[in-house]
Length: 542
Ligand code: FAD
Ligand code: SIN
Image 1: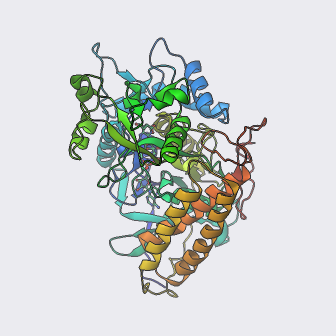
Image 2 (image 1 turned 90 degrees about the vertical axis):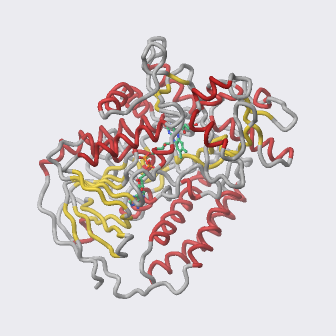
Image 3 (image 1 turned 60 degrees about the vertical axis):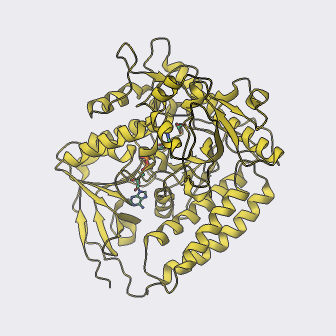
């Protein structure tokens, strides 16, 4: 046995310190003993990097119905209406929650919340903190969580796998009772036990070579839940953000859609405003349309990027609305008040995920999934801009309510066997992990990108399966490390993306395949069922 006998007990374990995880933690009563685990620093999460804002109906000329309609249209009508309603109706409560935690948003001249616009939204409804909304939200929520005596924070702890009651031959229906996590500092595995566990691990877009996401986005929550017996849906719908900075020294830097919302144009090298040829909504068409148009033009002209141009707005306007972008791009020698910005699409958002109901419950009792890890049904075939942070807050609060209601069922937790790594050794060469990591991302980018074909997807699947076997063998033989845990998850989630993409015999929203260019008449989600799936008494998503 390893020396990994350190065991922690809590009422609720939350994996993830982004908008979803922190909302859940801060919405639970103060007498709950809560653990928050984060792979890295608390603010190293997609939430922190969000620029645009949070969509919510606050303007009198707008309505809940408008927001619902816009979401359904952006999602190519594959969204589940109940989930859309639940989310949109939770807009006001979400903003109230954020304000109550002290988050400061940009105000207009009447001291009301300033509302900006983004693609797909028929009205101004994006609440924001200039162009660094995520930073404003994360910083405040982290500050509040650190103030709570009942919340214990575990930074640099990487959840490896869930612990389920059936594995321990515990009587009663199968449920999640905690997880194993790798402490990066001591290189030991700890046991975390609780009657309630929530996966708020973010998305999986680091599966692609070019991504707007931070390094943490390796699909850990989705892979862990699937291994534990939860269904996963709609993994073929990966959103490519149309405008990430193209610069050799810039890594994953997004240029917010709000810039197009405030009038920026997309141009070709000859100056043509090409989006007008593709969609009457031009630069404010939904992201799938804009990303595909850029991809088409880049391939047609053999160029590496297109230009984003906001120079026709006044310098004062630009500096007031986009202070962070202005400063950051200056460091690359780009003055956005005078220069156009070179941009390319990059993998940005995982629309699919672990299937949950309106309480954020997964298929497994005691297990919740929230935020980008979850499939709630909100986004359908394409997420509308700024709907994802909203989803994090709404479903984070829903999970908190449900956990509170279920809490009486809390029973004493059993003794759990320690992580056994007595049969494994330290890896002889880590280069294997690096090599497989690069190969996986390159494969996903080249074969499972913005425009797909069945042949490319089959090629990808073949390569991914080889990589998966190699990585699993490595996992069984050697001690775990952060890179190995992430790669094991990423290869599993990549396989799910390809499997879902192969199952969808149509082009809809973010999934575009040359072999099936039209939409089917029927609306169906793509569901992956794990071999150990057991139907719960009350099945979610009937
Ligand atoms: P995250 O914020 O990504 O947090 C994930 C957490 O899980 C991290 O703390 C991580 O350490 C932890 N974690 C993961 N795996 C493990 C593990 N195995 N063990 C322990 N911890 C783990 N959406 C909008 O609505 N509006 C926007 O303006 C917007 N802008 C964006 C800009 C950028 C650059 C990006 C990348 C995304 C943007 N999005 C935006 C999308 C949105 O930010 C994300 O969908 C959302 O923040 C996800 O929140 P989350 O809490 O689910 O996950
Ligand atoms: C952006 O600011 O363009 C990102 C918004 C989002 O992803 O919702």
